[in-house]
Image (cartoon, rainbow, N blue to C red; front, side, top):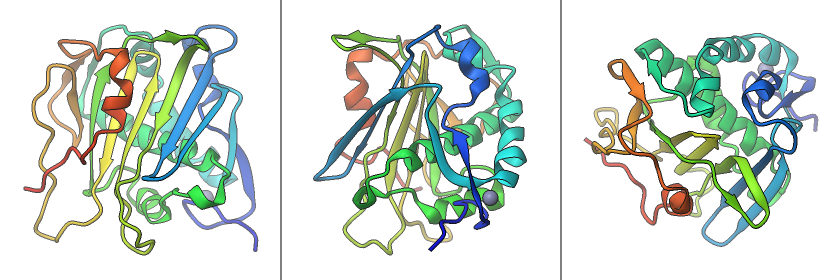
Length: 247
Ligand SMILES: [Zn+2]
């Protein structure tokens, strides 16, 4: 069966860069590595690729060249500053664009993993995102600044980590924590599995290392008061319990 666009359901599919080519000028020249890690309770898949050359074939050309491209243009004025750790003021409209761009990019990273057993790309979430073009009421997101790090294998400029917190029922709504770091910029999005119609997700607790990003708030100045320690990436990206509450 032909695979269809994860957003609109159309065929044929075209190759889309996981990270847009225009980011090339914002990342250090040559050899920028991307590291993405997907975790379930029992499995850990780690994949290292070039940050800018990786492609994924899960969307159609009209989506790729249309609304997804417009999303790129919306974040283009400030995303390179965030990646390079330069102070940025983010208006509510900027926050909306950045949260939406991040979710789109997280979907692209999710779709890159070819391992069928770990196909976690939440199709339900893709359809809702295509309809609304922004994160859903089941999601909250926050933004921090993390000093780029180096280890024995060199530096990874881009990291994507997305542990699942869902139970074994594949028909239930997915629950996950998705963390994307590009240079200094770190965005974390939490997707709660289920909410009653009258329930909303409580905002993140105030934190010296994070600003809330979604739902959108008042104009904020990035970076937050304190940077996130790079050594805590695993603890931040894979918290032992889901860092959300229902209000
Ligand atoms: Zn499409």
